Amino acid sequence: MERLRITCDLLGVNEGIFRFLSKPQRTVITNFPVKMDSESIEMFEGYRVLHSNVLGPAKGGVQFTPTCSVAEMQALAMVMTLKTSLIGLPMGGSKGGVKVEPKRLSKRELELLTRQYTRSIFNVIGPDQDIPGPDLNVNEQVMAWMMDQYSTGIGKTTPGVVTGKPVEIGGTLGREQAVGWGLAYILKEYMEKEAEEIRDQKIVIQGIGHVGKNVAITASRYGAKIIGISDSTTGLYDEDGININDVLQWKQENGSLRDYPRANPISNDEMLTLKCDALLPCATDSVITKDNADKVQCRVIIEGANQPTTLDADRIIDERGISLIPDIIANAGGVTASYFEWIQDLSSLHWDIDRVNRELGKIILTAFEKIVQMKRENAVSYRQAAHMVAVKRLATAIQYRGFYP
Image (cartoon, rainbow, N blue to C red):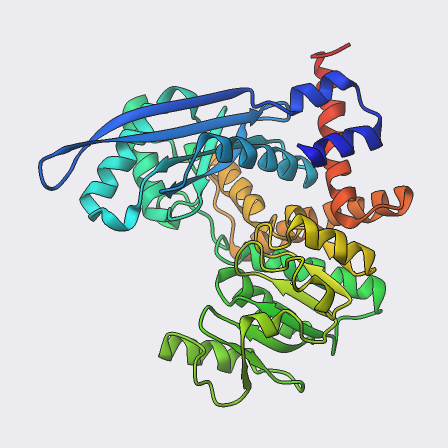
């Protein structure tokens, strides 16, 4: 809300538009029963929030977490509205979830919970109004159950109602790689603008999940030197560069990076303060804080994870003159791939992985160029520029649609 207020003031938009964007258009709170394996009946609370459909049907994930709350869903739905606007998609923002610890559920109980949740929000989702996708503790199997339940209710197979499905029932190729690819495109573009080329630039990547792994592979192909990488157990460091394919093979065979013999072991905290050209936090939120922001030694931070930099750290990074490219654009490859899945489902056409990669690059780099231009014209940070691009498009759309004079 604070960021939205500042952004609207900088853009000089109508006060009514700020008020419109500051509230979700619709919030659904639902309680539904699930028959457990013990034959008992348990009640679960679920949510689905549509923040905005000004630009098109809303897009947003579903999460199954014990801390899921309506306030969090409303905040994350707003973030999705800004993200889809920023990268130029014809979509709005939404979010949803169920308050549950999924690890406590059997597979049968998880399926019943998914189907009951889908029934409870049946009237507010759909391929032309709100399209759920996978988020925390939700995988392609859960999305397949959601799609099947909705299709049963509407009387016809409707793959476009959700994204993140298995490829066999309407999912898209490249979904797993998309965030890492998008991050690598931005890394390369930034380095070519600031350092002429990406080759031999020293890169540190915290996290080796889907995002970290794929950005490491792609950046290595570009000629960058990965000098640090980590998983949840340990970090690896080698000033001369790490062989990413060798590291990935070790992790696959051993389950973690622990005891990898061909690099120096370091902690995840030490990883964040290595001297490098680019630092890519791709693991979890709030890893760069006021306690370590003054120790960061890089030219640019590119946020692969969601909100890895706290507000206090953000100010310190900005004061130190370190560029920071925010998550709202850096990890937007995920929602872009979801958009590709949706349009493939609507058109009943299947794209090969090369087309997914090519179209992803166009969208991410076009959006990044708009951010660079906004930053240059207004002398603001990359984060502020990104929000300005997003809000400006939303404000223009609202004015054209006539919600406010």
